[in-house]
Image (cartoon, rainbow, N blue to C red; front, side):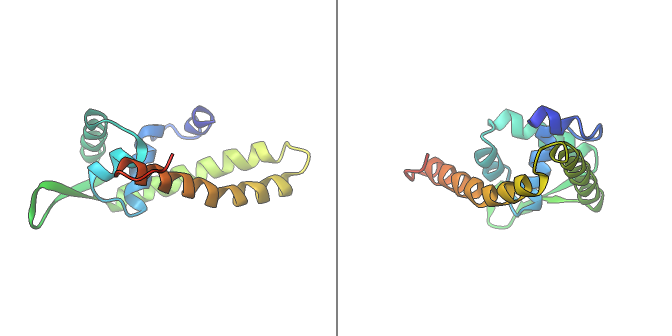
Length: 133
């Protein structure tokens, strides 16, 4: 499914989309994004460097923590993220329209969202020493 959605946009890879989306959702530190997305330090560093070079995000030092860096989307980064998400939604809606009951499927997908968020939270807790899966 991710490769299907990735082909929605020629402007952004799925990995870079996930990083920009995480920053947009409030994860501002690379270490948190790496844990949330299950990426290693080299992968997140490469993504942040590439996105920064493209002018899609900025880095700022964190007061009181010399090791940490806050990440923020630039206006261009936010605009690109919105464009890519709109393209993904359009592509998904096209596929859903081909099913027997598109409205029911969309309702089920909406019901699935909270479950996905719960699993993500469990994984984050597990990574921080909790007992989630």
